[in-house]
View 1: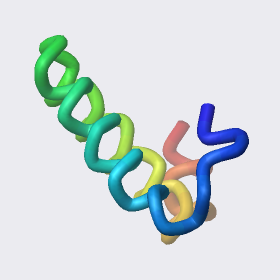
View 2: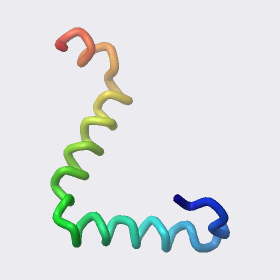
View 3: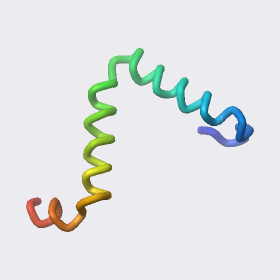
Length: 51
């Protein structure tokens, strides 16, 4: 989505994307996804065994 966006505008684009997620009601789903991804990144062996 950010193809062709100058480097100086990338922080603004990230903020706009987060505002859109919050405005359309997906904020809690977004955070559930982010937490799951971060947990899998930090502790892959622990959670793969439990699944």
